[in-house]
Length: 389
Length: 246
Image 1 (cartoon, rainbow over the protein chains, first blue to last red):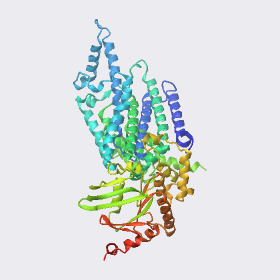
Image 2: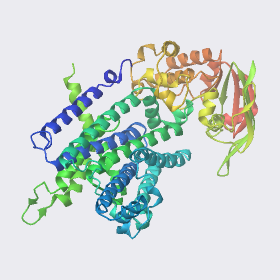
Image 3: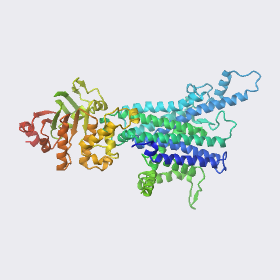
Image 4: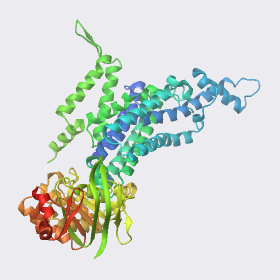
């Protein structure tokens, strides 16, 4: 029980070590700073994978530790992307507009620049004015604040309504699915101010860094993702290793008992739900500048279900399990659906992995459930224990 | 001895079934009371009402010297006010150690932030050791609660109630499924607790109730049928009828 988080939870130093080695490895192999063995696009895939690991870490806190099977946490992830995307698009479009008006005889006024920028961004959905929700999109600082506030507030309000009414189990899961579906359908509409199904694009172009190539930016984002994932891991390990962890695991196993010990279970659930919603928002804000585009499809109900599948395959309630699950499954998914995997010609039928990947994933899920009920993280546990005296 | 809990004329109906019918009940501190009655007499519903899980349709539940109403309080607030409840089935946190189970139960601020920044003090350590000795689990502190025997789990749950430092303990069938030796241990434990707490024991087993040697309240169809010493109530015609089904 004593000592710092690094000695209390042995996975913390190991995790930080592996993450540091990975960051060094990516740097040494990158095009910008090293041998160039890693392409820019694959560096981005790795950086994005770390963001998905961060979302899975949040999912493990809320589901693996607190027992709330939220099937809507990817909505917070997408919102984080949308919020940072608004700033990226505004700032970049404004730069382009200013450049194009440079040669004008009469220098443009600020209002003219603003109008022209809005026209650039929203003409695709037939609008010309700034929607209200873009109010702070011209400020990086306020946008970063909103990355925390917007997903946090949605999680807080949704959680407050759901937990106060003591909605639990499968009913809560269905409600969270409804939430992410509703948000996705809302964003699909053209007149909501977020460019409908076009989403926000060109997010890989970071304003102010126009002269710096994507080769360097991709490595920087990888570092940033690794740093945030590392900090979140230490924070999450600290949260679950003390009394707070005892209480939320108690809520998972026997909510009634915790309540009769005098704890307001709803308050704890709301705390964990909101905190993990914010974590997902931050993960999304780091993910989408690497992905380049965010659209309503990203937060379709299936995305949140995948998040739960990653954590289930990785093994619940051990933090590193969720990270391993997310990394393995999402990288495999990229491999099989990205056209890298060679199709198998059976003569009468060609197995095209793009179509067969969900089948493979489903099969993997069944196998893990049958033969490694504690997930990939559980396999790691049994290997480590074997080595220990 | 002052009045600790005063339940006046409560009634509760579930889908037309009257589980509790104009029930009144008073207990002081310190006092031991056994509540007996056949299945469906309303024993568990009574506990649900006192602990805030179920709201009665009518009646009052008053608590402590100030006579505060428990009816407007949540389960957590009632527990913080000093009502501890042990369930029929032993409910402990099975994948956590005995030490952790007791630590979570210790009377300390209950908010999420207090829990996040909670540090184990010397006083906490001493209190946990003291409770562990009381419930006979001193040498089991580092074991997961899930591997304890049935009887040990029951004691651990009683220990968790004690850690909350309650004034009133509601104990539902503490002796169910216990060996003779474990029963004796439990009886001694409850009697010791009743020296400084109000203890309400719900029990089916007459032999166990006899050993507790305390005032008995007999419930039947949601109201009090008889009250007094065990011999007194067992001599009551109506009680014999209810129990022996004449």
